[in-house]
Image 1: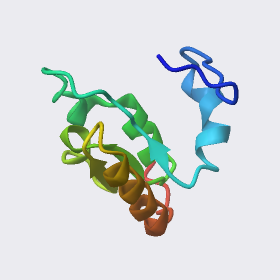
Image 2: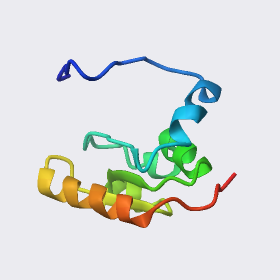
Image 3: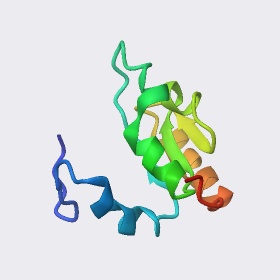
Length: 99
C-alpha cells in the first residue's frame, strides 16, 4: 500500500457516518485491483451501492463497472484510461437519489 500524507485511512465506517460525505461527492471511486475471482463485486460492491444511493456516478474497473448503472470503467494499471474514466464520470453529473 502506498502511503500519502494527504490521505487518511479510517478503516470501516458505518454508512450513517459516510452519508454526509458521499452526498456531496461529484464522483465515487470503487478502486479494486485486478485479482482473479473478484467478478462478483459487480453485483455486491457496497461502495457502488452507497454511491448509487446518493446519485453519484462511479469510477470502477471494467469487471465491476460493467454490472452497474451510472458507472464508468477503466483497466487497472492504465492511468490514462483511469483519468479518462474519471473525467467521463464527472461529466455525467449527479442523478436524482436512487434511494
